[in-house]
Length: 111
Image 1 (cartoon, rainbow, N blue to C red):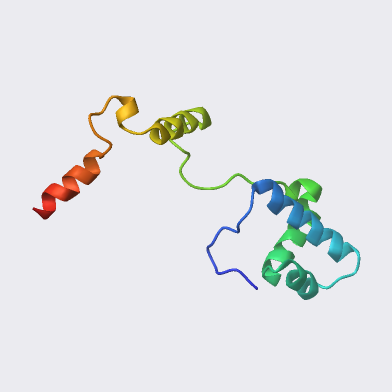
Image 2 (cartoon, rainbow, N blue to C red):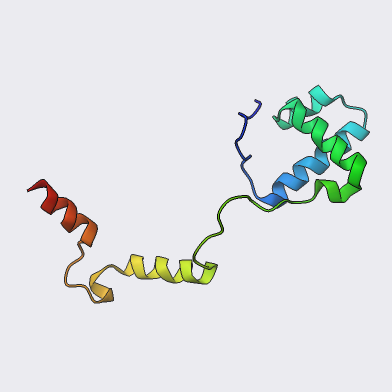
C-alpha cells in the first residue's frame, strides 16, 4: 500500500534505514522495482530513489536520517520527570485540589 505524498513513514530512523538496505539487497538479488515496492509496501518511486542513492553514495546513502521538524523543548530526562509529577497528581505537588486550572476555567466559562 503506497504512502500518501508528504507523509513521513512510520518507524524509527534505524528501522527505515534497514528497510532501505533490504530494498537495495532485493534489487541486487534480481527483484524488480515494482516487486520490491509491493513486498515492502512502499511506493516504487521510493525504491528507485533508494537505488539511486545507493549508486551515488554507497551504503552511506541509505543511512538513517534525522526526523525533520521542531526539536523538543524538553529533554528526555525532563519529560520523564514531568510524567512522574503528572502521575502523582496535583495535590501531591502542592495544589489544593486535583482539578487543573484548565478544568476550573472551562467550568467557569460555562456559567
